[in-house]
Length: 443
Image (cartoon, rainbow, N blue to C red; front, side, top):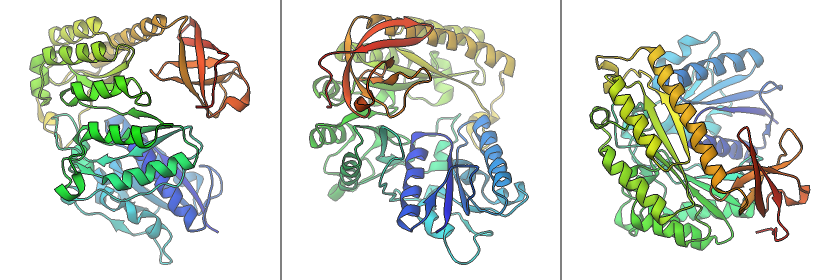
């Protein structure tokens, strides 16, 4: 019985794919172990969305190879896709490199009788026409499962390496999605995050026989109605793909949770055009206004990128002003990272790191203010909470409300993995506290 350790960096799609690897290894009779424990095979599912993420991936590979000197090392994910044939030269021991186009072959390749040391399964991801079929039996010990429905991106924003490492948009056929959702429900997951690299493109690449007019909105409608006892969240979606129909479905469908994650990236129109984003700051404002009007209780998280080449103090001031006035819940702030292979990497007027750090710090301060304002809005109210499997460091239960407020509260362990009604009672130093209501239920 071979012992397998898997380490995952990066996005929810990577988390899903690592869960698929685990399911494949377990089906082959292997035993999963934690990183640092004795292992025969280590798998590192890497990320390279930023320069820092790429450095973290290299560090993770080296660290795990030191911890497991006799183990077979298998490297996959976006850093492996970008580094390609250079990877074996970066490390003192041989590695097996599996490109993103071949992830469905990872388990078989890692377990092959012949040595995996020099194996490299790499073909241009740009040529990939279909999504890798990676079924998952169970999503680890997590209360919330990621349901991957799509991979790849067609946008080629000038700063982004992801289309180069993930390839074109590819959708999982509806029947496969429903099969996976049914497995997760049978395994006891009460909530699923519908995820992909560019979820809003779902269905556009499927032929008429498979698509059946199923776009992202229709997919969410089918999932919610097919699994009425499961809560569904939608992962990041572009502002241009948020329709009145999608928001109305979110408002009307009890298990389509009021939670949106929307990339802005810049609040200045000049910078947005240089980024290749395809919308204006005014159009973004109107989208957020429509979201708040249609789904008043929604959590609205916004991605923002600071220090893009050519971003002046005036450009940044415009972004800051837009976000200060925006009725959003939180900000996800990223300093611009120069990525070789992207158009923006060759732009002049690169912004000094110290300036990027200063701007990011200002927006992170605004993020804390936005979160506190949103949490304060719900003090004294009761919301449904999916209680997680683990308690917080103080021994309290914890979980997220339907509109993504993180709560901790006292309660019995029997409430874990159930939907409980929790009254929000206090907010202190960013920590939101609550108490279980008499009407708590198991969902």
